[in-house]
Length: 155
Image (cartoon, rainbow, N blue to C red; front, side, top):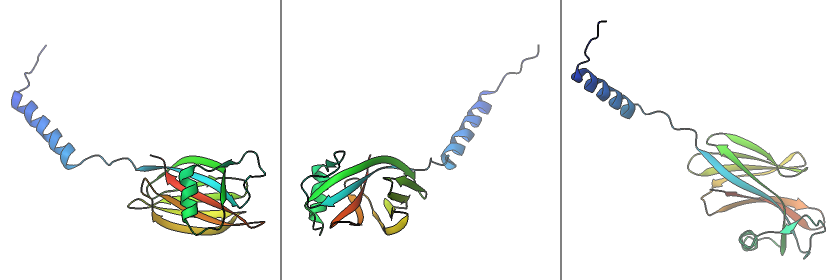
C-alpha cells in the first residue's frame, strides 16, 4: 500500500481556514421565542363569583387592575394559558368559548395583542412587554361587569 504523509503546515492552514470561516460567517441564530402567559379575568363588584371554577386572581394581578382606572372591586381568573410566540410571528390562543387572542412578537420586546370576543375584534394594543410588566386589555360584559386579558412574560 502506498501511504502519503500529510504535511503539518497543510493541517494547520486547514484549521485556520475553518476557524476564520466560522467566525466571519456565523450560523444564523434560531428564531427567538417569547414565552407568555395569558389570563382571562372577570371583573365584578360581587365578592363571590357565581361560577365555582373561578378563583380570585393573585395579589400582583389584583393590585395592577386596582391601580388602573377600573371601577370593579373583585377580579376572578376564568382561564390561564401559557404559550410561545416567535419573533415576527403570531400566535392564536383560545381562552374560552367566546374569547380568543392573537399575539404577535415584534422588535425590541414589543408585542401586539388583539382581542376577540364572540368572534368580533374588541381591541388591539401594541407595547413593550418587559419581564416584570403586564399588558391589560378588556371589554364590557353584562350586568355591569367586565372581562380582561392580562398578558405577561413567563421567563
